[in-house]
Image (cartoon, rainbow, N blue to C red; front, side, top):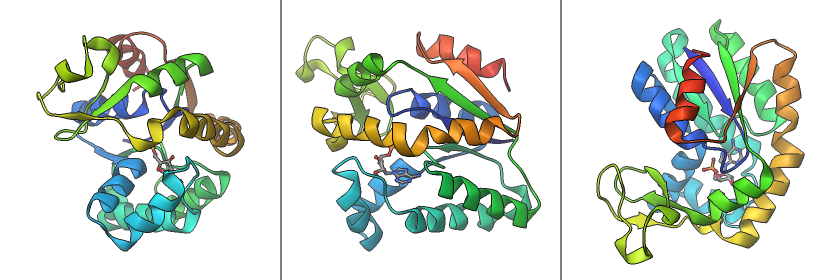
Length: 212
Ligand code: AMP
C-alpha cells in the first residue's frame, strides 16, 4: 500500500498516520519528524532545516527530495509507505512521481483531511507532543500543564516551537499558497479522496478505514 496524506497543519495527519501505519504494517514517513530528529542530533541537515522551520517556512525542495529518495529507493519496488507531510509543493509532487515511475510503482490513494481554519488554529495552539513516543495530544484534555502526561505512554510532553501563534499564522499561509494546490494536482489522477477531519480520533480513523 502506498498512500499520501494531505491536509493543513493541525488537520490530524500525524495522528492518523500513526494509526494507519500500525494497522497495515507500512512505514510512516513524516518529513517533519525526520527533520526534528536531525535537529535534535545537531546534524548539518537539521541545523539548516531549522532556519526555515522556526519561522514556519518550507525547507527547500532539494533537501526534502533527497530525504525521500533515500527512504524509498532503499526498499526499491517493494516499498510500502504512508507519507505524512510530503509532498508539500507542486515541485515535490512532480519529483515524487518521477521517483516512483523510475521504480515502476505508483500511489494507491491520496487522502485529504479537511478541517476549517479556526479549528486548525485552536488545535495547533493546544497541541503537545510526547518526548518519548512522539504521540500527539491536546493540553485542553488536562487540568493544567503540570498534570499533563502522554496518554499513550506517560512520557513528558512538549510544545513544538512552531506551534507558537505567530508561526502558526505563517504556516497556514504557506499551506494555502504552496500545499493546497496539490489537491487539484492529485484530483486529476482520480486517486484523491476527501475526508471530514472534525470529530474524535476514532471517528476520523473509521472514515479513513472505509477508504482503505
Ligand atoms: P510538520 O511536522 O509536517 O508540520 O512539518 C514541520 C515543518 O517541517 C514544516 O513547517 C516545514 O518547515 C518542514 N517540512 C516538513 N515537511 C516538509 C516538506 N515536505 N517540504 C518542506 N518543508 C517541510
